[in-house]
Image (cartoon, rainbow, N blue to C red; front, side):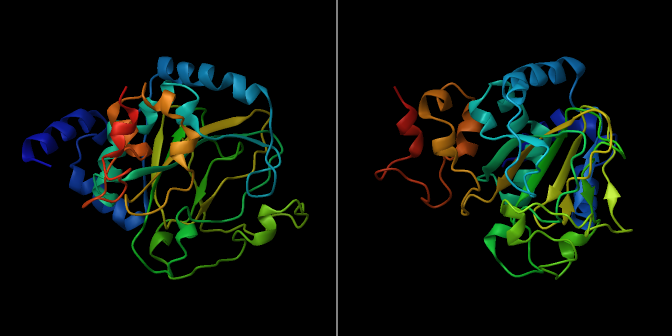
Length: 289
């Protein structure tokens, strides 16, 4: 990236940096494992997102296990659901940090909405790049964005994080996700993961939290009378496998209509020197008419 391009990118995100330098924010990100920006999305943008998700949330399909949340609605493959989601996926503030951590050839690993209904219990502790099964401590292999579409509060299931835990050597902690959390067995033992050092990400609508892939976190319990909605695009290095197979999740006919940067993030891109080619050619050729 040229100095001119880097300066331009900083100018674009400057309103959200609140007078602090990019290096200052990155040092905080590296130290704490997460950072939060408030008032990133406007009320009209939030309304557009809610409208786009309404048909899918209205179906009220709930989670299949403890990890997904038996009283939660999850909507996957969001890039295929509405063009509005592309704006979140390629938001300049998110990409500035994702690319700094993972490289310009990073990919969209997952992109889903999580709507916690009243009565939802706390999720098991987990870290989002655990599927790579690379022993800790190690560098993060992901950046997760948490967009607060609704206000996240102490009572409605705000995401809970363990500050600095991205540097911990532990591959397992008390209350961490287990194989049974992906089964149909319902947990009946209260909240085995309750911790005094957990911090709840209490944020107003339109806020953005970024987290390292190795940061221990979980969805909180919704003890309120209303649902809590967030959207979480997650990014990985270009040389790793995405959690969701984006080339299948977003059909070519839809991918053709998306901005070029989103196409690249889906996988219509090359990780140097030539990882990701199709029949010896650049994968973007597949999208050409």
